[in-house]
Length: 577
Image (cartoon, rainbow, N blue to C red):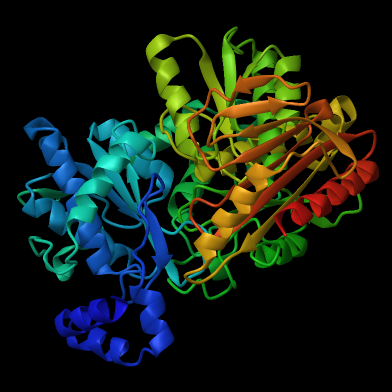
């Protein structure tokens, strides 16, 4: 079958693409044409190139036709409301974005496209502000340069929920021929940067600059220490790097508006499809922030901030007590921002009585301790920021709770309700403000982190992932998870297991024999609850062929908690072998 697919593609692609395909080995052909890119609630993502298992214009057009046909079932009003299209700095991102607009045009679905790269949070904000029926973001987030992807958003600005996604997938799967997708061609040369408000055809318009300004206004409203920033911002010792991504314009614009004089890593300030100064544009990696740290040492900075290509994740390095830069985990970044937001709101008397935070089930339970100690309600949801977004939308309608913060251990967070996806722009600005606030109190970010640990307990996290490549990778992962579900796990790493939650069945089996329900949607996750809010969680990645293990523990001191986490991780890996 894969050989037939290859032959069909070879007969239909253009001359340059045909040249690429003729160089494929037998293994290349099998790997590229045996499967199709999966389309789920996170959209689709894969390596760029020719083939059904690759990101290319044919896959983008086919996916967009599925989206367009779904929108057509919603009626003429939905078609008029249209779709926001945004994109990052990756290879072919701008071209793929135009491909989306071309297909939507054929179906007479309006589209609103950005004149240049814009990050995830501005895309989410624009969907809400322009009242569109959906949105598309061309990005592979923090994946290597060889990848690109296609994220779909619902009308609330959150990534599309499972039910409409399933409908879109039905339409996509009906079309087996990648080359039969109809579209209205828009000359690439006519799509110019800076063409705010222009129309590319009867159904495609370029988004006005006003959207950017409205977004910046929303961020400015969230600042909790504007007077300190105004007084101290000029002398801040902070380095920022966009890592060649879409964060440069919005982050530096916000810094300028607020009077924060941050040093930008010049070598990484410009858009670069190859991300040529880093191996992988992932700000959670020390190597990716190395240039920022070097700049920080050069100017005597206290903090280094880095945003990923679509600026939905923030990486941070801070100085410890010895004056050396250390990398913070996503949990630590979220905990520090949460602590600052609650603390400042309480000081200013603006912490709502019904304040609530939302976090994912794999995110640190230290957040639960901090929130509960301050009278803030905590909601735990499945992995994926769309589930945090769902809570925000629910409370906006009911008024039952007031959302003040949401975050994931995977370096994503959101401080306000203007969007429904992660925002590293506001996180960067809030972190800079927190730095200035702590310094005004004679403290530092590292000192505050130590104080939090002293107050609530030392916690350690130990996360690991195993990659399963090739055609058999998904089958192996499924087999491992199936085997795990058949086990009766009473202890792990010397720690008693209080309960085992299976988010596929929705059952929680407790050590005393009781059976309860998770109360959350189905997901391929196994969650082991240990004593003292400690946990082990195992799940396949939603975007990569990886099996992830999350371990979080508490203990009386740092070393003891680290040793405990390592011991539990070792046991967890044995369960999977």
